[in-house]
Length: 85
Image (tube, rainbow, N blue to C red; front, side, top):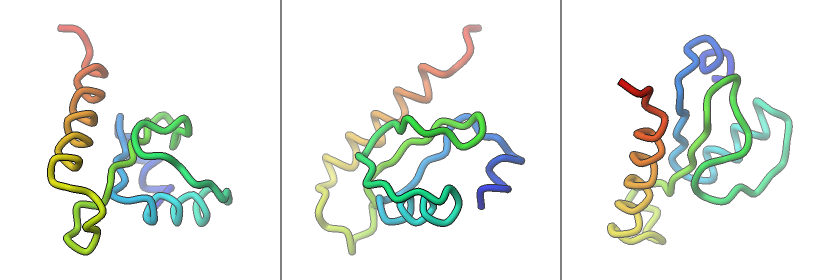
C-alpha cells in the first residue's frame, strides 16, 4: 500500500477509521501510535494524511451528524489546499 501511495502521490490520503490507520502505521511505517481523528502530522511521501471515523453501521459510536462534521472538515482542508486560480 505504501509503495502505491508513494507512486501515485495524492495530495491527501484519507483513512476510514483508526484501526485501518493504526494497522497501516504498524505494517508500513513500523510505528505504534494511537492517533487522534483529523489531520495527521505524519506524511506519506508528500501526501497529507486525514483520519476520519469509519462510517460503517458496525461502528455506531459516531452519529450521522458527527460523521458529516468530519467529512466537512476534510472538505475544508481539501479546499484550503486548492491552488489559487
